[in-house]
Image (cartoon, rainbow, N blue to C red):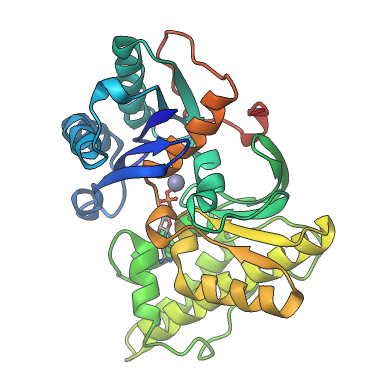
Length: 338
Ligand code: KG4
Ligand code: ZN
């Protein structure tokens, strides 16, 4: 079965073709980040309009790269939520219409399930069960994955998502958008031990996160030291270290609680090299296997949607002939996929 995947939940237009036997045949990505950079964050209306402009040409390019024509597609998967409603509707409308025109089934994919299963696209995929640390711009959660579609939420953020904390802190420090990569770059020249940073919610049991206090702490530090040379780099490094340490502590707890032997990291913040290194070191120390998607499949992409959609279509899941998108869609509402 050959599945066309479409991702348009935020500011990246992603398309991919996934084949059940041959794996990923091609993927194409167009990022709108440079357009939103001017505003310091995603402008939803601009995002929707740009998806309208870019999706069909990207789709044709991706099919050509995969050596396919539209008639070779056996099913269409599109991100139906969570995300920006206007942006989601572009992918949902195009995906549903193509499926209808080709007479093939369509399936609505949960964006976070796409992220969660992205490590399975890699050459040595993890076996089930595993614990997934899902850290993106909109979500931070620990999930126990027993099989595809069988997810138990272990803990999530009470306020800001990890990526959101990176983005807001970067903005505060006068770094560019998107904030995560900009802050990580600024941190390279900084001393993470120069200023003290809290490790939020690690002094009490539980698997919840909270990052908004860390952001406030950073704001206060910045106000006190912004005139000093090195302050930007040192604060960026201290903030990044605090987020990484906090995530490592929570992952360790989740691994102990579930007695799982394998940890998977997914979502945009999973592209952070320091986080990847710290979790790999923790895995070696405590004896867990650790998997990540390649960097380009941590952030939003069409490949993860084509792949998750393939598993759901193979399990017989189908969307009715209407266009549906859900800006909010709890992961817990997902059905088991076979
Ligand atoms: O998964 P994603 O592309 O979109 C959502 O589903 O939200 O994640 C985007 C988030 C942004 O907050 C971005 O700043 C963050 O991931 N991010 C990073 C890095 N690359 C992207 N955060 C820290 N370090 C990075 N290298
Ligand atoms: Zn995402």
